[in-house]
Image (cartoon, rainbow, N blue to C red):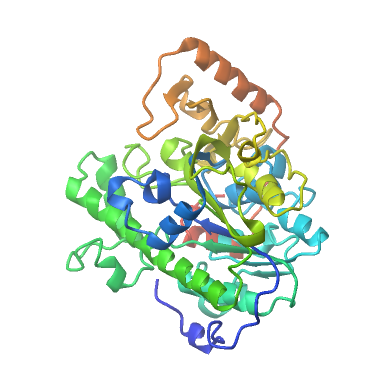
Length: 462
């Protein structure tokens, strides 16, 4: 993605003398579309050195090896983090479907305790009109850029500039919650500069990770003719985007240090969902239609310093099941605010020696749109999943297939265990039965155009 000219007209967030840090800071970092095998303690061998700043941060704190998302798309998964509810609770059907205004908000809980709140997001999918801004005193979604340039996403350096500028504008002496959302790893893979991309791919190769290039390898994968060399170059372009985000996250962390804001600091890093490469031949290089392991298994780690240091019992690697739905409650506890958000649980309880029941993780796909219902919760015909006790059960009524049971781990090996399948199937059926009624998704022309530009809708979609 070319860096817009407008950036040169913005004030330099790292140039002015910043205010000294005098209050705790909670930093919530979202890495859109980042697979678990690309980062930190769950990274595959070819990704270990891709993101050194994020990897060092994970090593400083506690990293979850079995963290699960609630959705295959950006807005719904982020709504789960910000409300502590799954899709049935927060009401997001798909991108472009606003969060239920009555749902609780993490930012509002911080505000009620006297904290300042600010957010810098990198994609139109999280524009303020979708309702995630509720509770944030400042919410920079770069909406004005759309009118000037028709941009629906901004690059990682812009997100970092915006986040630092928001910190510099915060009220002095107030503890602060900052949410920063980096979108670059989401396709198209064309944000990273060549100095980074050259570490992962041959720059002389004419193939690029733009929409045309990804469309080409998608067609090849569906036709069964995807060359292994092309598989490797696609992953290379993908990892280059993560390396670019890592550099910019590092610049953000350096900016915190320059401002004296890293002494009493709590950082949570998560991905909203992953990405399917060529694991599913019918739907390669995508997310939206599937809730398989490459989509639901996400990186998640937490690090704390000073007054926000993690409890003494926090392990370097936490192998227990964790849900994005639990992040809000965990943040409230680790920040000293207490209470719960939505129906999330406190993942840090075992670190203090308390037992914790691990609730099942429910998730749903948001595509194909033409298969959704108009007389009930729209996504009931689509693929859904429940993850519990190391197993994943999927159900996709629109495909006419039976429930399928797998190991909830990379490779997603099938499991022949009728009793376990029946138990998980009953959990999923109960979740389906409790789904809310129909919720219409009516898009104005601007939102429709934006979601098409981001690849979430086909031009002919309703």
